[in-house]
Amino acid sequence: MLTLAHPWLLLAALPLAALLWWCHYHPGAPASLRHSHTALFGPLPTSLRVRLARLAPWLVIAALLLLVVALAQPRRSYSSETIAGEGVDIMIALDISGSMQALDFAPRDRLETAKDVIREFILSRPYDRIGLVLFASRAFTQCPLTLDRQILLGFLDEVECGLIEDGTAIGLGLAMAAGRLRNSTATSRVVILLTDGVNNVPTLEPETAAELAHTLGVRVYTVAVGREGLAPFPVDTPFGPRLQQIETHIDEALLRRIAERTGGITGRATSGEELKNIFATIDQLETSRYEMQVLTWHRELAGWFAAPAFCLLVLAALLQEVWTRRLP
Image 1 (tube, rainbow, N blue to C red):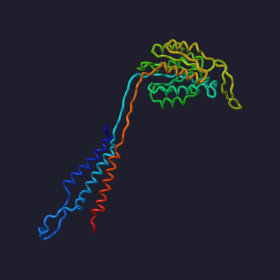
Image 2 (tube, rainbow, N blue to C red):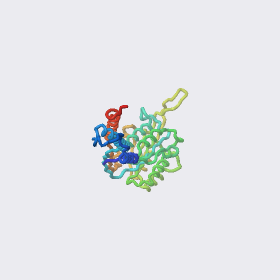
Image 3 (tube, helix red, strand yellow):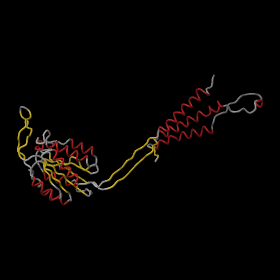
Image 4 (cartoon, rainbow, N blue to C red):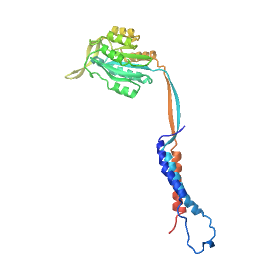
């Protein structure tokens, strides 16, 4: 299909059309010769030089019209569209408590390893709306549900421990993530809850948050990150940062109950590879029934009008300056 990128530029052809009309109906005074008896000359044929001189202004006008069309950017548009099926709305609730800095996923800590796996998961699901909730002693939405992967990944890159006061408010994190899905119209609504600790903020019990998610029809997948027991942890000392072994605990039983109450599953990751496998399992369970093929491309045709216009202008200049030039 032939389209114009800037069709309003064709209005510039109106004054050119008026000029064309004026040149046709007001060609100017014809050349004359004073003589007492012009009948002696008889009818004189129009020479080629005169005809070429009359042709030059028409060539200029035609070139200008072609340039106007070229500026409107004519192009041939091709498109292919196939759209179907239903995506999944997913909220990721990510623990950013201080214990997520443990280095049992060496050489990276728990949080950075989790961010890498979440990043791959986001990129693998281009047709789902995904959002991000962070929690420590309280919870907040880092990014609402969105299809814009660049924005979501930008927010994910900014995640670090210490953004809010330390603590592990699993109930608050789950409740906020589930609440973000309250108005979702997707067929499948999912929360992926990732934590490495024990709920130690009594503001909202995790079981209550799980019941809320169940009521809203939200399925919760829980992921426990890290090893139980001693884990290397960076500590600032007068001699610089040092690693110390610190006791860590994970309430796997709580995470299992949350998942079972909402129809999800739970997993435990003690390495980056295990964490990838858990997210791969979730990816397979939450299949997006989506088929999208939207292709639109354009073949620019402005050159097909600009090139002849340039040639016409050159030809008009040659006619006026070389072949029909008047000598003094």
